[in-house]
Length: 97
Image: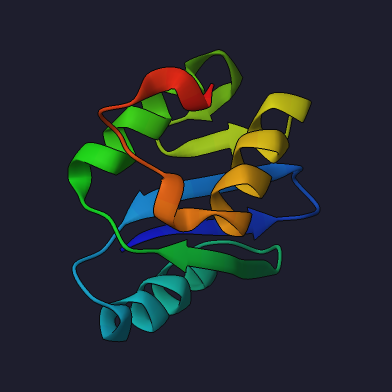
């Protein structure tokens, strides 16, 4: 699963990967423990590391650190497209950007 976690106060979103939905809840808890600001799971879609890396490369100009990205207009637009048409997300097709 590829997930999107929002740090609203920091104007940042984490784009990450986990093997299954059960570990997603644990991942959010782990991240929250190390973060003084409230984190919010926005959504998750089916996908693997290839999809995660694809998104990281596509949005590299908005990268803050590691898997955290500034919530720029580009990042928000990509998330909107993915959330509203997750089936169309294909890391082998860069026409999405």
